[in-house]
Image (cartoon, rainbow, N blue to C red; front, side, top):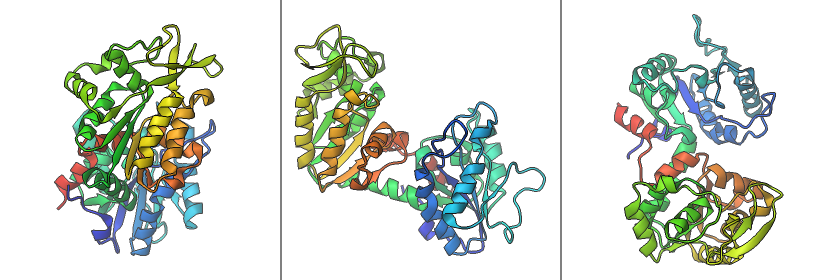
Length: 394
């Protein structure tokens, strides 16, 4: 898609409505524990201010509110953003009768949590469009700078562009360009690493099989496939029900010399942190135990493929990395990637969290802000929020 970008937009003397991805980790009192997602949109906000935007109106969702919970209000986000920009950010509780304040007084404004309004995520297009139209009246230009929600058909992502011109911000441009360039014209060898639980990741595997030189599959997805191939996987968590409809791709995986599945596993006797553990080959799997991580021989094989790669994309952990005893496979994949000079893209979500936890984020080309959005790009899909911008661009 030829997506309109901020760099090609005229913003001087315009009111600009910016959809950010400030869905931040918060403690029980609503205090921000990590402002990484704020920092992602700082270049876009500064660009607007430096290029003469009359007013910057920032909107985001945070959390999954059931009502208007105080801890999910955007007041503390506005305060943190104000500190980073060293400029006042005015928080608006609701649009009400007065709407947005005078830009001569309040140049940067933050709206309340979008998900406090049920229209934001409504299943009815007319309700989403009602909110989108209302928000569009606030400004002259819309900017989508929230890659993490680009796969969501929500009012702030797909309805607003129906009622005003829009483009993508700098952080979305970086993520989309980096991922799509790697998929279209990768330096080779091109290695993909897919982990996690859900069998629907086979959509990504199907697309990647046509593009990559090797696919390394770990996590519960690998053991779901091994079970399908007739291997004993014991009490390992699998998603065999999710395999429905994937018969063709499962056959391709079984026959492909590009696919590498685990040859051993780190087992636990129960699904808990302090459970007993042991290493076992796939052929000698204990039926009373469960695989909670890939084993040392599989780690060695994966490391070897990663070391040769010139382009690497990764989505999904190799095991239950939240349990220290079963985090080694995921850690070793991150370390192996960090040691190469390849183009290294981590598709957000749990794999992104694992890289952050390992302190290796700066060693990667890109750690995506959106696990779901990046996975859809890995699947070869167009992101619905970007399609909306292209479809309705004047």
